[in-house]
Amino acid sequence: MQLYHHPYSLDSQKVRLVLEEKGIDYTSYHVNPLTGKHMDSSFFRMNPSSKLPVLQNGSHIIYQVMDIIQYIERVTVSLNGGESSISNEVMLWMQQIEDWNPKIFTLSHIPDKYRLFVSKFVRRVAIARMADAPDLASIYHAKLREAYETEDKLMDPDLVKQSEQKLNKLLDEAETQLNETKYIAGEDFTLADSMFIPILSRLTLLNLEKEYIIGRPRLAEYYDMVKHRSSYKIVIGRYFSGWRKYRTLLKTICFLCIRNMFRKY
Image 1 (cartoon, rainbow, N blue to C red):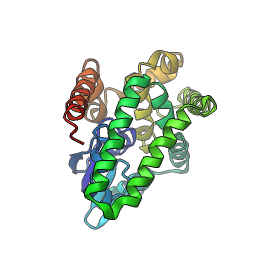
Image 2 (image 1 turned 60 degrees about the vertical axis):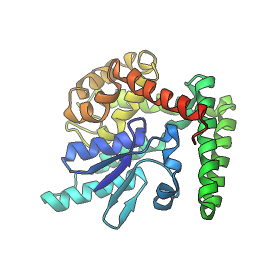
Image 3 (image 1 turned 180 degrees about the vertical axis):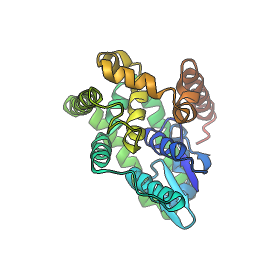
Image 4 (image 1 turned 90 degrees about the horizontal axis):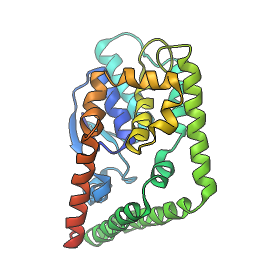
């Protein structure tokens, strides 16, 4: 299996946590969306949505998070025997978690000057790649429209508020559930937890842990507990725990500044 992903990608974290928890070997390929690598024509031809992650297993290419996770579950069952661990309760939580789109929420909490700098750089990458691959022009034009539409959405306070409300509702329901069970969907760690943990990590990355997590005591205890899992340390901890998140961010910012200075898109 080959997984195209990046540590910044929340959806990539979901899939990688599942792979690590299942103990499945895979080849890792980093595709940094902040530097426009997801706009390369070779990646576009494989995945027209240009979104991360992408799982390739032989001729199978999958780029929807829920589809990838369910595919990994089927592979695990096929290799190890037994029955699928996706119960109705687990599936309900997975769908609820997937229903919240973190994009608007995340971008609304990034200072405008940094967000606009990255957005402008990625748009320039798209234009440069379009010139190199004119047969993909329609797809690149669609991505440019999407970028401008995202900026318009961020100017709409109602949309930003709706995203925050949906997140709060999800966290409140998780807090209620964790008052009854050890993990999100019961007493055992499941696929639902692998999908939920990256949301908490994203809040930490945005320095919003106090506002959204600490005030929910059972959620805070749960988060502290799952941080000790080896899968968390491999997928998230090594990049974002403590000072590491600043190293990861600094490397990307330096790369963008140098490329922008020399107009290397």
